[in-house]
Length: 102
Image (cartoon, rainbow, N blue to C red; front, side, top):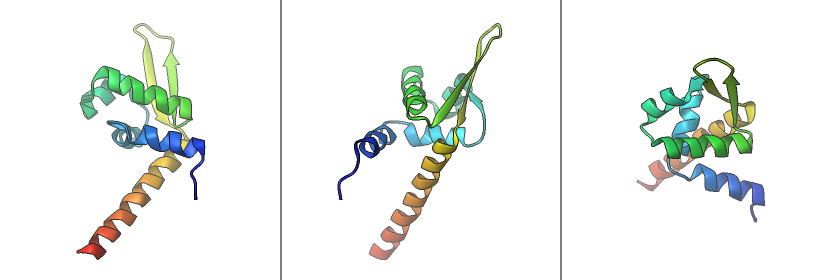
């Protein structure tokens, strides 16, 4: 079975530094960039790259509020929630396999 181009692209993004952690942090609700950076301890560049990639894939909604100072919030979309659910199920399967190996 060959994976589709889209599936390969998504897996490549999910394998990057901090990607799963960003999804988990966003699962707690709408979050600002600075709060994510403090919580995840990722560099601003890495965090911005992950959020941009997730936004382009439709996993994250970016909402800019016209305020001074500017406020931008990030939220998981239903598609992003399904991907996070998949990652958690994958983790469960891998844990069960690991238990069987012991």
